[in-house]
Length: 347
Length: 256
Image (cartoon, one colour):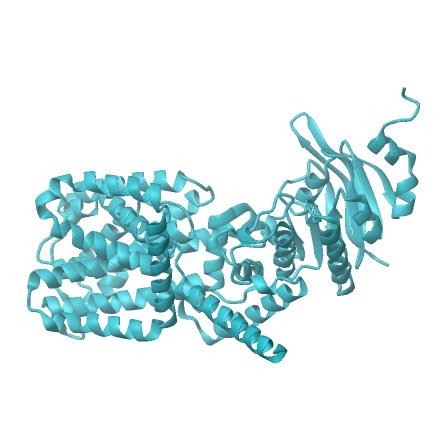
């Protein structure tokens, strides 16, 4: 019991410290991640790091739906796959330049997101989960069987690397930087979104959708827009992923993959951007460290889920809002200052 | 004074149960109107019909000459209605300040792209909202709690926060569902001051309440429902002496 309270104190102290020094800490972290590819030549390390970045982007997209809107979605891998296939087909068959291919992958994924969102988001609860679960499987089966378009189980090989203004970025280092830029932009978008009125509406829908509608929110519209934004992000990063790894196969986008993203953000923290980063990084690196235990991975994930749900249902950093912690501390300090000066006058 | 909200012949049936039967009601601008009646009389159902939760089986709800029954709930809110809930329904995982700001979302002029890109227009709006929300919290004496979770507030404060959130929607008509429930005398006294203050600052208020002292003190007019029917209406004095009302609340004298 006592140990527990010491831990809690240390944790609160750490959170408060981070909250009060956000800018320098962020600056150091950003410098580190930019410097990282220039500190190592190890292709394997760079690849894992790039996958981390891609996974965080997908995790953020999923967190918009699951963490902030409160509806579990199994469609992450589906939209990711649609983006990857559409982007690749755009580049290889339709002769699109690399960036246009990414935009095309994004648009197609968004379109499918809209198609799913139109009927299912009128309902609440687990309907979305069930529909997206089925959707993910349908997408995989189509990818597997539409031989003319996707080459089925052979996968698509030799996808041209990312090229911007005639420059072809084949090295792991360059792709890491591109992934970093994508992550940076997506994080800013997501942060803006959830701190805006749109984000407030989302959180209100999560907490009590009926009350949210009574407060004047067109909840079906907000949910649909949010779901499509999430699909757009997945699609874009999917198209980038295809150009980065140069080989795609339907099994990369199976519904089991969606579950892994759900595990990542639940582990890190639903409704929290730092939580998404933590969860996605930890659960991208851990399986690599435990290669010898690969066959037990789902078992370990399952155990992890049960433990998390029991002891930390919100995830490691669930609903952590550093901005709010900072505001609270400043408020407390100003109150103490007023009290302090008031007491001084009295004496 | 011209009528603002007119309810005519309102009937609401749930299967075989008639929750409201041919209810007529008029609310004028700047009034505090009370809806009273025993439990199960249909008071909350009346609120639910006015705010669009249910579509009435028969009858009309007309605001300033415009029929509003049949509109969606969020559309009705945008016309200037806002309500509080009998069973408190705040957004639990959001701060007190965010709960109030959330009420303003329906008036936001920013589209998704403003929100995504945090444009200057968005920033300006956000600043206005913050100021307005703090002002509302100050009016309702909740400023000290602004960064707290609503669940951690005392009961009376939670009820006031519901009113704050309703005010934030820029409503002109506030529907308060048992605002004094569970409050002690002192809290109820403060609440009457708050509610009269709201009327003085231009709100029209319709409230459901069981606390008779509170109702008689602040309401300009009362409507009494029993078993879904309107049995009396008028000023508190008229209603207090109405034999039908006494029957409904205390039972008939000659019965025994």
